[in-house]
Image 1 (cartoon, rainbow, N blue to C red):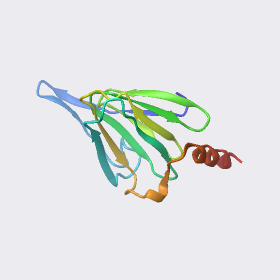
Image 2: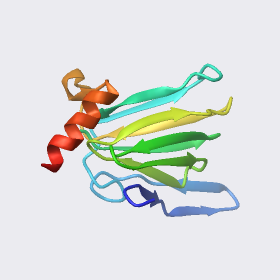
Image 3: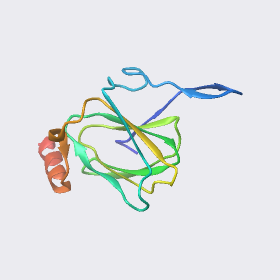
Image 4: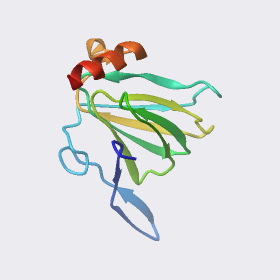
Length: 136
């Protein structure tokens, strides 16, 4: 998983239960400006299919599981998110697709900035072209 970065979160717990703390500029390596979550997904319907020019994100599967296809324009890696104790870093210029959501899946995403449609690359060919232009 050369370009894929998984963050393992420290878990605190005892007989009362478990706790994971997520902190801006701490175990989340950026300031968190937006949080959203995906749940109650339609069976067999994938999500994502985009990249960002500058946005950084951390995806955490709070419940259930899903698969995230990470693509840097050269290499593709499938990552299974199935634990609230690990986060997947989605860096700028990384195409990502989410699928195989379990019925109970809750996928939370922490983002480094507010929503900005102009930061999205929604066409895969445009993404690959942008990656190739970055390499020259």
